[in-house]
Length: 244
Image 1 (spheres, rainbow, N blue to C red):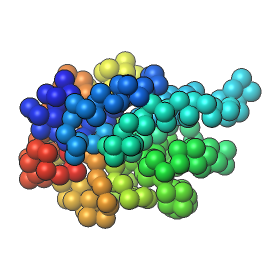
Image 2: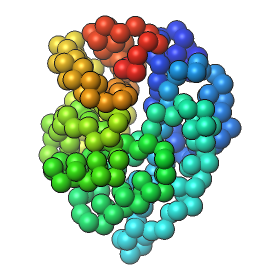
Image 3: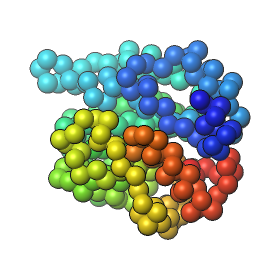
Image 4: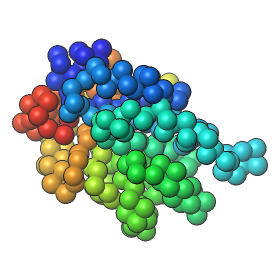
C-alpha cells in the first residue's frame, strides 16, 4: 500500500499513525525507508504513553523516560536517513493549559533531542500569545487544525512556532463528541471549503522551511480524495513539493 500511495497516487509524505497505539520498531521503519524514494518524508505520531497515558495513580505525571528511549530507537532509521519530517505529539482534550503541562512539554522536547517535534492541542485553553511564545522558545512546532466548531475544541489559528508548518484537517462532523471514533472523521470537504484553505496554506508555507498538510477525515477514503483535490487547487504535481 505504501508503494501505491507514493507511486500510483503521487503523495510524497505520509503521517504514520499506528505508532500512537504501539511503539515503532527500527525494522519496520527501515523497511519503509527502503520501499520509498529518497525524497519521500515521514511524520510519526508519538506513542500514547508519551501524550495520553502520562499520569500515575496520584494524578501526577509519571516517569516515562524509558518510553521515550524506546520510541527514539524505533524511529532511528528515519532519522539517520534524513527521512523524518517531525514527530507529532497530539495531546488529548483533557490536557489543558497549566504549569505542570507546560513543564512536561519542555521535558518532552528535551528528551527528543534534535528530533523536530510538533505539538497538536485538542483543548482551546492553549490558544494564547503566551503559549505560542513558549512553543517558540522551546523550538516546538504548532499544529494548525481544522475541526468542528464545538466548545473546547481548537479553532483554526495560523501560527508558526518553528521551522515546520503543520496542518491537520480533521473534517467538520458536528457529532465529534457523541459518535464512535470511526464516525467522528466521517466528513468530506467540499471544493469550496478546500478553496478557502488555499491562500492560507500558501501564506503559511511562505514563512516555513517545510510545510505538511494532512487530511485526517479518513473514513471511507475521504482523506485521500480531499488531499488529491487540494494538490490540484494548489497547482502542485505529484512528488514535486513539500505540500500535500
